[in-house]
Amino acid sequence: MAFWVGALLVGLVALAFTWIADHAYAIFDAATGRHPWLPLVVTPTGFALLAWLSHRWFAQARGSGIPQVIAALESPTRRFRRQVLALPVAIARMTLTTGALLVGGSVGREGPTVHIGASIIHAFGTRLGLHGRRTVSGLILAGGAAGIAAAFNTPLAGIVFAIEELSRTFEQRFSGLVLTAVVIGGMVTLGLMGHYSYFGEIGALLPHGWQWASVPAFGVLGGLLGGLYVKLVLPSDRGWIGKLCAIRGRWPITFAATCGLLLAIIGLLSGNHVFGTGYAETRALLEGHPVTGDSFLFFKFLANVVSYLAGIPGGLFSPSLSVGAALSPLLSFIPEFDTQTGALLGMGAYLGGVTRSPLTGSVIVLELSHSPDLAIPLLAAGLIASTVSGWIAPVSLYHALAQQLSRKVEDARAP
Image 1 (spheres, rainbow, N blue to C red):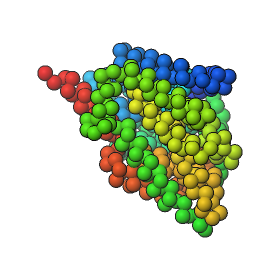
Image 2: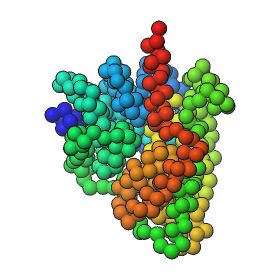
Image 3: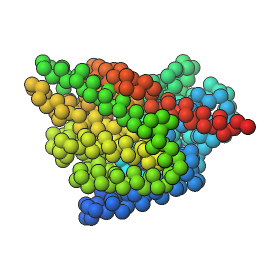
Image 4: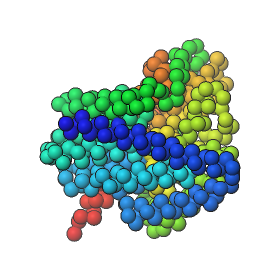
């Protein structure tokens, strides 16, 4: 009952969040279409307000939400799990992420959806008296998996994500329950939305001839850029990044406003194409009708870094896919190169470089585009990217953030 009814609720909430978040960004996009200079006022003001709300009232709602779920899985105490996975925190994260999209933040909704899913099933299970460590871990895993599956309509990616990213291990006794939760969450999505693919029916073909040279090339590029992203956004107490983190910790609201202003300037330089998830720009590139220039890769990467450093709630999956797709034009010099196939390979490679979870990145791209022929080259590019990224940033982003979160809680409890 806990897994099944909880998964049903996750599917409904994920769909509602998707609708609200998409309409929030649509409002911002329409407003900037009429007034291109509007982000210079709205974005820094909105970032400052979101930072104030999250620091003053919802400290646990900052970030993407996935590190919080990982920390809850690894924590041995019920109190920590209740604190991190509290429903008010999940609702606050969903609300503030919607606010971030409303003011143009370069963030996604997938990470927050994972946190929401884990919180809903965890709360539902504990209300029914399920408190055993293994059982609670199964609840959290199922909720996170159902959340990513419902967010993208990618059930297989939800299962792989739970195994590869959330837990790194998998209890056999819970495999059926996690699978069932993902299936129910997927049924809700299909029942209410019908059969659809996030980026449409792309159906890209397997590379041939010289096109295979793009696979290791995308792996290296995605790994270098993904590792650089992790290096820039992961909190540290050393070097200039440490000084930047110290400034953010001392003046969080002013720092967030400055990040918002930088994002607005980047947006103006890019023709207002770096705000939000980047879905429209990515889909246009996949359809062979790009609406951005060659500089989009650089501007979107900076927009993602600035938005994450601001400390506002929001995920990084969709914006990362946008950056990955923008890698495609860089390899157009390869003979018989297909831009569409290249965009998908770039998406899988960069996502693998950022998250260090190549299997999850590959499966997500496959399900988003309905391009099963690309399974082997996508996985190869993702593995190369994950390896190269590890040379630049030895620690996994999500797990490093989860460990920092756990240490902060332990330090707060210390006498």
